Image 1 (cartoon, helix red, strand yellow):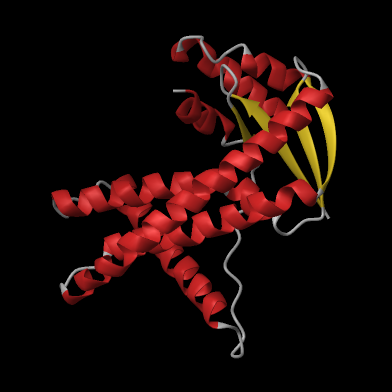
Image 2 (cartoon, rainbow, N blue to C red):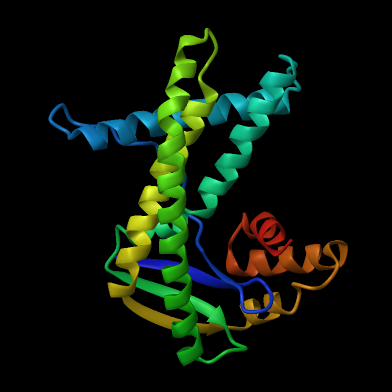
Length: 224
């Protein structure tokens, strides 16, 4: 199986791997599944329920108090962050990968950037994995309070996502990579320093040509 990704230019010497995958429902675990697999599955199911509820509350302007509104915004923010890490997760399930990179750089430079991005991601997700795991243990005390333990769920999701990204970023350099220069990504590189109001329609047009629906929001967030 081949995974398709883009090497997004974010200004200066910054790049980010990006891919869009269908939103998959967590598969049911078998009775003899291991402890870690059961925990990951339970976390995924609970998280989907919480994201759906938070989006519903925000879209219908339900007012449950400042704490409930804060929790809903926190959940939606993390959901966007999780979507941005899908590229790394998917890499762990593939043996081959195709990378589109800006045509403004050559293939040798693109391969060097790819390996650098993967090394940096491995270090970053490793540090956050340790940090969130340390905070998760004391957050379990909040379970005694008669209110959904949002901090514990939040940290649990972060632990799972950072672990998966850390593992996949470490495995990715061993995949068989096929690189293709892309003129649309080269144009995207020229828009980083353009005022948001001016670049927004051009980024949307690029996203349509690349068939990446969530690219405009992701690019604006990362380029800011």
